[in-house]
Image (cartoon, one colour):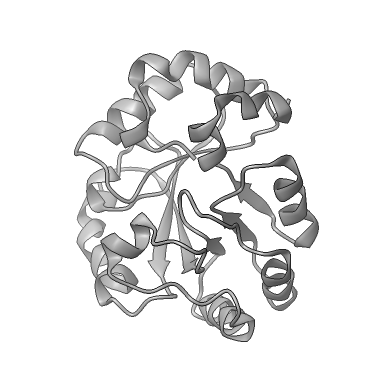
Length: 219
């Protein structure tokens, strides 16, 4: 996961070269708070240095650009703010009509991690308690039954603790669609635990932001 507000255009070539040498399969681009036009410019630069698919992880409509390959159409089903359940999606339709992005309906579930995250502040919603596993599982399953094509369990950028293996495995047992897990993963063991617990895709952003050499461990 690359956050346009935390990434310098000048640093892209070196950073993407390291990603190309790693086990990464996709490049996610997006953030909760991003200045207008930054996403478009960043993706243009990334495209110069990699053939990996670039997937938008938009915090707002302004981050939608046809320079990417796909878009996670995120509905924050852990919260009850109508703007992030459906409102922003309606507003984005006219823009989506103008491009050929693959749009992937995604149930987005924010899990409590020990600190307030940018997602929580921007959306004015509360994460689900990490101790309420049954509610997390039921929320994920409800997303699937509503027609979501992916479920994304998110501890949040810079999370103190990642989503636990118990939560991941409990959710995965009930789903018939792919499961993405992200937030607070800083070590190889945490990455491996997420996959062993059932994650189909694990998103890493914090580890790179804090220590770019983490990519060396992923070759």
